[in-house]
Image (cartoon, rainbow over all chains, first blue to last red; front, top):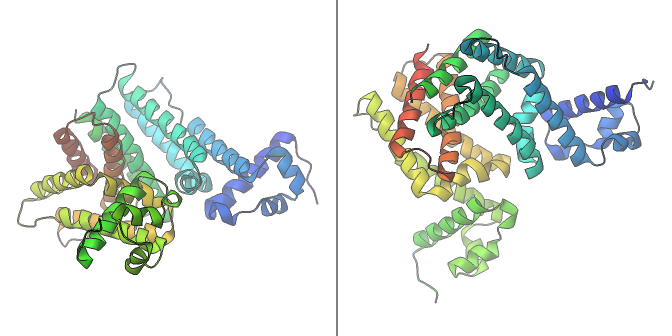
Length: 189
Length: 189
């Protein structure tokens, strides 16, 4: 049975299928035919939305990066520490509930090509700028703080990837570990 | 002029050339012919040492991982904080003086294949175990501390890769940032 979806719904459906397949397998092991089959659409319709497999993959990665940035947008009305903890809560929520997207952004997408890596790099750069803005406002951060925030984001990703495999600590303990580490890394200077 | 080298010297020479080429270019852009040409040996001699290009690459990565682990071996005669700072000094020394090897282990090798990633993963696992042993001796660390050490190693790598591009902070400031961050991440629990 072919479900009638709007253009936007159809596109979102295809991107969600892509996120799942690409997150759980290497790029070369995913075929456009399989995506079309799962979505119950023709191969032609899929190519109508996305010109090439590479383009489809880039769209999947871009959609996940956009979602991650949207849900973790800081609320400048809150005090700094609350912006940090609520940002981390939203981030961990995303990692848990969009597990495929999280794995795709931080594991699968890295290995494919320069253009894809750029989408992920831009997403990380936006996160770094936001964190620096929360901590420092419009003031220019020190070089050490810039390095610390870059390192901390790698810390967060490494810890989350491991935690998604096996949740050996509570979500609150994880959030506190991440927050404490950031404040210590930047406080120091 | 073909230089006469011992088997071991020859092998080390080839591995050093490999580290340089593979660190600065994607795997596919390095040819065995070029390695042989730079070393002034025949292609046949190179294949005598390393059966395939993949095998040669794996040997280069393994040699760099071995060197990194050797130079950063902790000295258990020292107090904990000194083991940490002298270990970090040795680590930063390696990153600066074996820049190609460092880039290869932490950037180039990641993208190639599962077997190569395993060599790097084993090297990271040894570093984590050593750090946990320095901090906790034979005691079982908490799950949070295990996560923290894993995250911290990713922090170190991300910061060092950026710092090797542009040394915006002094080496001492960098070492202190890394040490402080580790102690804060694990102290918390």
